[in-house]
Image 1 (cartoon, rainbow, N blue to C red):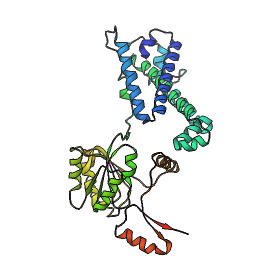
Image 2: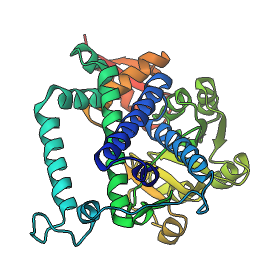
Image 3: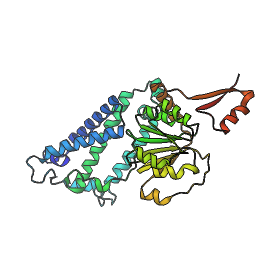
Image 4: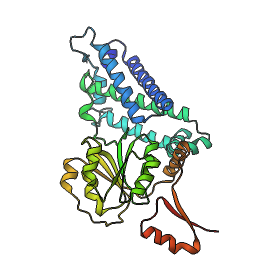
Length: 357
């Protein structure tokens, strides 16, 4: 699109038009993300694919190059984007100066302006941001609009660098990124008497499989919303998981048991799956099974609590879904030894609490 518009308009008019289009696409993406309350990453990808597809169709009509546009790029734009370009005669690429300046301005803006602080506040907790009178609508739209304009700027510089425009022009220059996106994911959780993964996961639309050595606890997990329960003393867990998922495996395993279940957890994961570990009650030195990890490209994530902002988000989640913590029993402070005995023998289902008068 940059190449085609550039061939039809004067230089600086072209820049204004392209950046304006980028701003408009960014704002549209922000509007959809905010109104539909979906994953911003997924929404951005969807809007991006739609815009790319529409552009390809538009520029393909009447073109002998099938959507690839070539124009005579002026020397100033080539110099601006080239690795061997010069800045006022000095052998420093202008593109380096441009991005250093943009980065410095962005850092200053985020730290010293109301808008920047509003972005931080909104990212930390939407509830707290609202109480600070940060406009979610205005911040969200400006942030996505600026992102769109910056993407358009990158397209202009790539036009100067390559001399033509096509869908994959930027692919060789992209940084590799890792994004963990869970959308209707399959998940299983070790139910050792203290976890509540099934209740949380169901609120996010996933399918939960829980394991336990106790049928009564499996029944309790089912009441909380678990889709399947596996008695780990009677069946092979990983084989049962593959059976329940049509040999696919699960996307995420949340386990807090450690050594005793580690191999089952790894064998239950789909290629590229994630294992989240937050405990080691049965031992902290399991067999690593490195070959399985790198061949199936598994990711292992350690978790110990979280930030204050994440705690606020959790409270908002609990409030929105009307979730209630599972309380097994409450003991007086004088009966703390009885409470510890119940925990030691694994008789609890949910939290054992102590009342302090």
